[in-house]
Length: 300
Image (cartoon, rainbow, N blue to C red):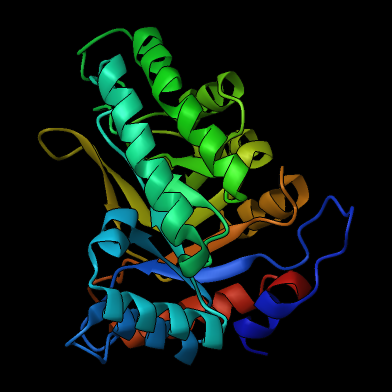
């Protein structure tokens, strides 16, 4: 069965498990994936429909800056074909003073109120936009405090609009850091990138166990990894993989996300596929979709 059937399944009221997460595709957009090169966003929506997927991400600024006619066409396609765009927002949370935070929050709130219904987005995503935990710009505690002050008003706006805000682990901070931020910020959730745990030296499964009760969205991604003690500087090699072929425990992750979803009616899983050098992107996509369909009744 195609993924669109899973996306259309009715969710049981009051059930703590998500019966049918919304499946989408985030990236990478390899040559040939987008057939409408004149308008890549329409091409991405066409890709979703061809493969039984529902959602992809879009910058809220991109929607805001479109001409009216194009934006109206996008809205028509989304509504008629049952597709969704997941808005991304953000500004320099770390360095913004109070006046800047208030101005940026009002700008984003106005744009969301105006255009979120058109996108049909179930959630809103953001990144930390705060360097990384090892950059020594300021102590981690101070960073998290500043982020909390900046994100709390945005999280309140998103909750009011019915599309909760979630922050992504971008290979910049530990999942544990983001969980602390979510615990300290009412109505803020986690957007879990399953592959980025390796990027910052985390063990994936313990990170997923910690993340699951806060996670409402994901870049669902796999990697093949290998230590490189022979290289200078020493590093951990992180390569591409079709989903299910790599070293990220995606099957266990999926079960954790389904079992512990904090908002059972909102779980958006968007594939992020980094094709290995020895595989064609179309073959990698086929293998990845086959793996997703193998995850069980919730995903087929």
